[in-house]
Image (tube, rainbow, N blue to C red; front, side, top):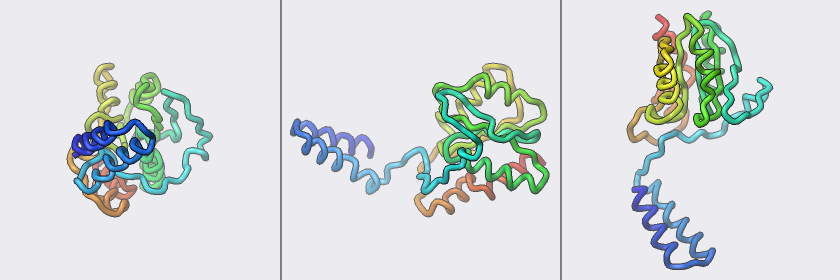
Length: 193
């Protein structure tokens, strides 16, 4: 479907070299994607609050930041899932589960030193949380990094499956795919049991 859409766009773009022709070609090429059932590797985010401001966070290319420390679980997260990891950490604190959250703003370059340092701390379950499929994202990058460096903590991922995703209301989809605060908390408790 994506190839058909892009082919349509390129065909129309070849007909004219003017800005209006390019705009029409781009619009027509992409308008059919939702109608053809094309799939993206992420769920839409919706309205995401600015949560990193309260942690005095400033973006630095390739630099991860430990937003919250903890002894039982280390969330390694990016994007929307950093907010969700922080919410889950607060919810699990009521059950005496001490959760750290490491925000990784970029996958390439990856902050190898910080991830290895935090993942090597003994006694912690390492969980990568991202709004992306299990293939090719932060989870895969972290798993490769850890294994190539001989770091082998208990490791899990909270990611989307490698399949076509359903459409619907975001809260329902987040529950369905295990990336809501409630489902993440339940999964962590299950893994620690």
